[in-house]
Amino acid sequence: MMFFKYTVLFFIFSFCALIGNLISKKYKDRVNELKSFKEIFSILESKIKFTYEPLGDIFAEIPLLIKGESVNNIFIETKSNLKKYDFKKSWCEAIDKNINRLNLKVDDINTIKSFGNMLRENWFTRAIKWNKFTYKFFR
Image (cartoon, rainbow, N blue to C red; front, side, top):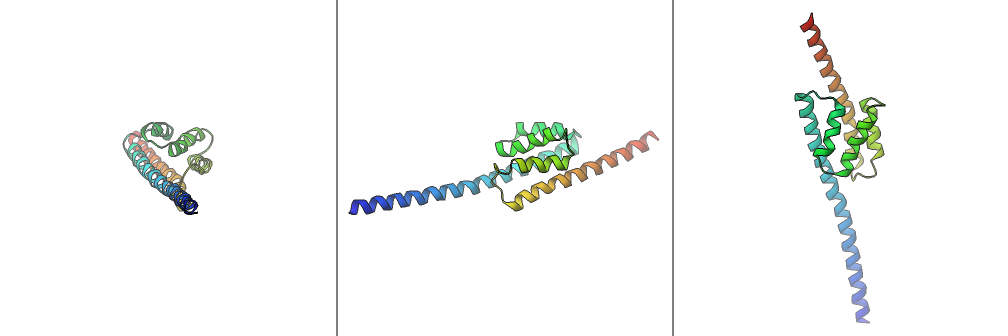
């Protein structure tokens, strides 16, 4: 009888440890994905400020620079969608398509989706300033 009790206790303890490891892995993956996004946004910011490369080229380079398959899939999808849609729609569609692969919370996803608006506005603002500069220069 004691052997049965210890066996059951061992299985209960093992099951609880397994559940704890699965839950902690989800949070660990969330932190790693957020760090990947932070690094990617830093790369995007510097490439947009200093190289003036098109977004499609930048989005093609990012999966080569960053590890993390779930995060890289978003940028690959966005690059392929840029041919059909504007940036905001292709960004949101790529996130919606890969949302099941990410371990992010709803607030994180909404914040990342808002990046589409921010980049689009900054991109157009910069383009407008560049156009004004070239207009004055060629005038």
